[in-house]
Image 1 (cartoon, rainbow, N blue to C red):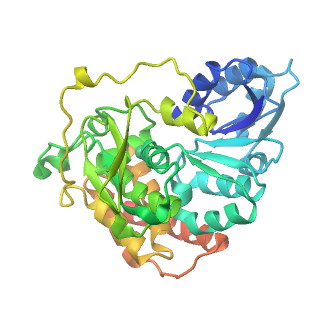
Image 2: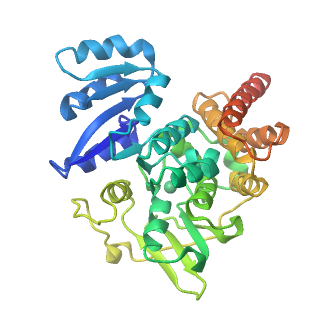
Amino acid sequence: MKSIGILGSTGSIGVQTLQVIDTFPGDYKIKYLTANQNVTQLAEQALKYNPDTVCIVQEELKDELESILKNTNISISCGRKALLELAGRNDVELVMNGLVGAAGMEPTVEAVKSGVDVALSNKESMVMAGGIINDLLKTNSCNLFPVDSEHSAIWQCLKGENNCEIKRLILTGSGGPFRTKPKENFSSITLEQALQHPNWDMGNKITIDSATMMNKGLEVIEAYWLFGVTSNQIDIIVHPESIIHSMVEFVDGSVKAQLGVPDMKIPIQYAITYPHHSPAQWESLDLEKMGTLHFEKPDLDKFPCIRLAYEALEKGGSSPIVLNVANDNVVAAFIKGLIPFTQIPTLIEDTINQHDWINDPNLDDISELSGWTSQFIQEQITTYA
Ligand code: MN
């Protein structure tokens, strides 16, 4: 039985991870579950999976969780510090990091420091601290298993291959809900429209990132750290059907692609069952029914977030950190109705331009830069409002 800890068990990735685990009765032991604020769902999961520990990050919700779980032996913790302690537990074989945004980075670091393998859905970890995490993976001899569908695809295409024979990585993206919308209509985009993703069912933050295409930009940076290529070896192609999840072109012109129905349970399951492909119960890909697959160049004029991400990656140092934290903050502001959709890239670019760039940030620098970035964005939003 393989022991697993799940960070963010009530979020989209956490819930789907448990759905995958349900299809392998007796194969996995859930050691811990964590949630930010969804007490009811966390308690339901705890009663069903009987983990050693559950953690609710919002401390004021601990009493409620305790009262629901009072007749169990499950230990209950709360707060950010407890979350980091759980992430660093070395009595689990795999941590599923399904946390959203910059808050997911430190837990990845804690798990890797303890020598535990991480199934990584939180791309922000690599965007903010890819170099640090790669060094820790070497020192502590453990692995990262990508859960992001594009990176899972590339990882699968590279199985048995030599990374030095890669010519380029081709990340596919659906193009989001505004792929065909004229740029002049972007100023009237509503939250409801931005939350309608054509293919993937995901949490709110990543759905907005898909609408701005910052998601693809963050994935370029994630791929850079995961696969050790240069930024000009990573291309993006828009593929509206989301059937090809990404491709690798090798130096001899041979191209490998990974295909499947757009269902996150496939990359989640592969990260959990790696190095095996295990039987699954979801629908098969029906290419005859699909008929035609389409491809087009991403429109960098309509989606400046892609350009910002490439620029941040090329500049390096603190730039990707500020890009990421600024994005977290402006997306949250857009979801709250504080800024229009078109202000998302503008505010991120201003923030990157205004920050004091440093070359080789350590974890303390990252924390300081994150604080500065959040505060700068809050001030900008107050000025606009
Ligand atoms: Mn993805």
